[in-house]
Length: 126
Image (tube, rainbow, N blue to C red; front, top):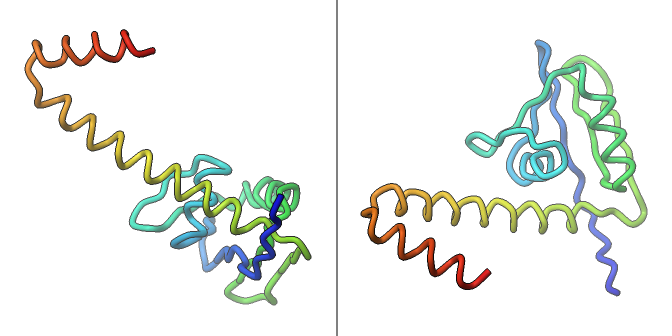
């Protein structure tokens, strides 16, 4: 078993208002852990969820920092950080979702006959 020591830290931003935001690869990790939607490489969650978010990140040993607008940065760092492991899993999930979306678009434009043939092929191979 190979352990990847990653120095990457998940960054959570708290500006004003009642929401926290994460961006780019951090948004994908939040998506895989909590199923929050990613839109334009950004995910957000209500401030009432921050304890749940921090608890899960700590249980999974994912280093994180919370950057507040008017307060000091809050950080939790792990010697053996699992950030990279969860990022790789999140990337695979996002790739799969994109492929499923493309398949769905093709299915929607297919004839009934083609759909029936495809269903028969799938059923025969399961």
